[in-house]
Image (cartoon, rainbow, N blue to C red; front, side, top):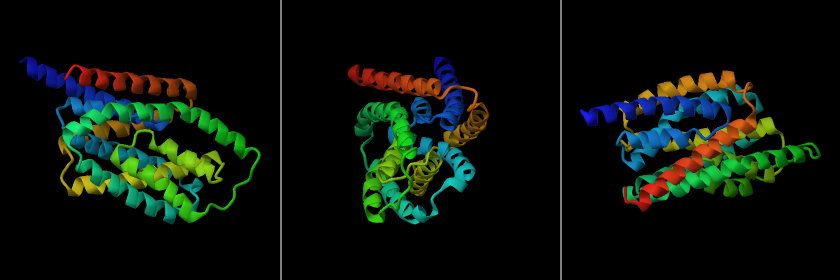
Length: 261
């Protein structure tokens, strides 16, 4: 009886966390910091939990790209897309060949790293915006861009949290200053990398569909709510919430490791 109640509470948390993750991704990002641990709470093995969470949150990225499609730099779609395909599939394959225990030990470091990346992204955005006020967009060399983006796309395919902000930073370093274009290309890169990873996860049978579909529905609903609420809550408040959430969850996983949980 106690086990059944515990399972029900975990399922309720999965539903809630998925919806909040959808809201967070629509408004600021970082939704995986909640939805991934919730998937683990359902008893899904770490590698499969990460794969399932990636699939569940992907439709929200597709909706975002549809909204931002007018700001995409079309001349970069092919080189960035190719890099995302190679990097995303490679990252997904490495994930699937990672031992469950090893991945469980890596999790807190990945969450902490993603949180720190998210935390500094505000400063990066301000720097990008400041540059954009003084410089015009210039041509971006294709091969150096692809080589620079590959590690990021690999990371997105492997775990992903915070990867979008790395994409923005690299594009800014290569001369893209317009914030709308940066955001659109960030979404495209994350979407393409995750799509390739998703195909790999699905083909290899690593998705827990009974939990994935539930999370997908509520994350989609959360994304719709988040889009409506986005302009009502200050961006810094949202950023602080995501960072605190990530730090708390990373601390929890470190605590579990220290106590052999």
